[in-house]
Image (cartoon, rainbow, N blue to C red; front, top):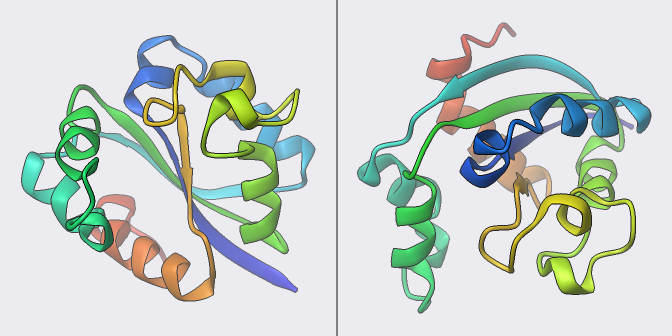
Length: 139
């Protein structure tokens, strides 16, 4: 099934200039970027985006980290895009991620793990809508 998913290259990976390498990894999985933009989140936007984690102990450090520098936000499209991007990213904790995944190659730790991706269709819809004004999506 052809799907769209939201993907974010996080501040640590943007700072290390690995956007191109990560895009290549997505394209190797036949995921096509249909919208993309480099943006800088405010604290309020980061908190809004990660609202589902507001009661967790890592919420403040996560939202602070996501405001450290620009992020590269994109919508990827392809066959089973949600699961495909999650496979390309690897496990949340880089120490447990499979060799060759984004988080294994570029992640620094469980929080500074270089990439974000929607975890299901409902989340993908919310996340794409959240950034739709930034990305000027069509249809």
